[in-house]
Image 1: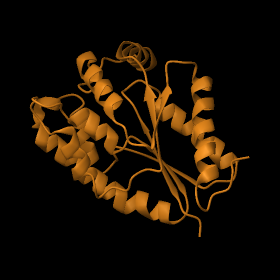
Image 2 (image 1 turned 60 degrees about the vertical axis):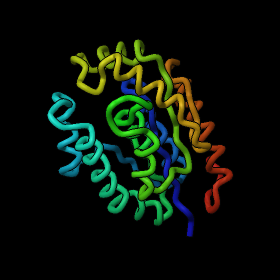
Image 3 (image 1 turned 90 degrees about the horizontal axis):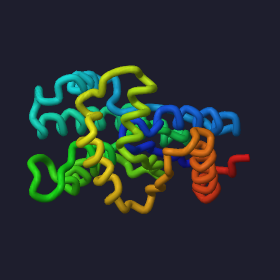
Image 4 (image 1 turned 30 degrees about the vertical axis):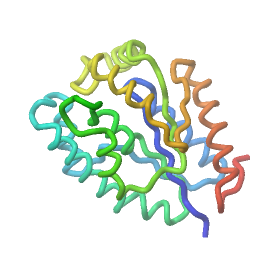
Length: 211
């Protein structure tokens, strides 16, 4: 039986993760792969509570916020990621525990959960075979958020927050992470993503090359 793969899309808000994930899913399906797309936070009761924080993040403590993300992910892993991966499918997730470490984690001396502690708390979650980390300057990401949605920034999208999150993402050195410059044209970004995924699939047990 083929061994499934887990590919996570990560990066600060406004980098185009959702759009690039959908484009990749279509490409993979056209080439004969079984693909499942998903996202975090999910639509579970925990995920819905997390979405309420977009407008009022101060309504819970950092530890309570982290607990919501962890419980939401436990359900996600148990009910979707693990079974679909075991069935030999390629699971594409829009955000995973790297986002939790970057958004909910703190540097030494700051208040809140430590980044390394957050990674340890997520040990129950399977490590992805590949993490597509889309990179972009926060100034450009905010410009794209405003232009794309025509909305005010939510509590997770403020400039200082995104600057700190980008700095944390930059420190992650997991070998499964592949950084791709998302400031370019969408097609150029997608071409770069496909090249990385094609190479990964070609070397992965039980998978054939994307043609």
